Length: 160
Image (cartoon, rainbow, N blue to C red):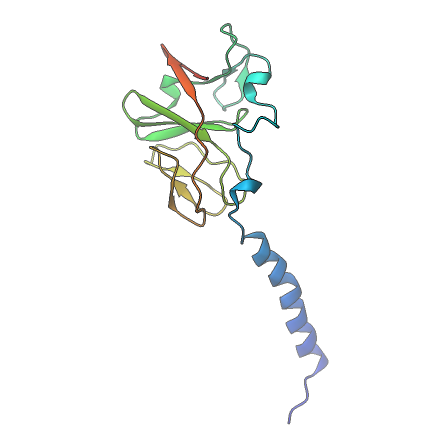
């Protein structure tokens, strides 16, 4: 029978102490942990002052009074544009067809990114979502992005 030396016991304990919390942090894809832009308990972007998106997705004042998310030119055909201030991702799956979803990934709550690559990418754990319906295309996310109602008037896309 061999004895366990102190160094070997401490090394194994340290690996377990560090590894378990790290794995636990990446284990949940509960949609209830992600912000839902349709949830009435949290302030919506339309509750704030009227705005227009700037080049970086943040919002600046507009004349219309509605929360402007993007201009049609900001959203590439076959891609998406993230209005970071509103936490909304606007997609254009086919020319002239605009859709919007929560920009908060359903896996761990990171914001998805703008893209022209045919999917909505999340940079944190590499989930990818459909431009058409916000459903997960590849995981670890298993729940779809929540839809957000929008209206398109001329070249302005606003949250309805």
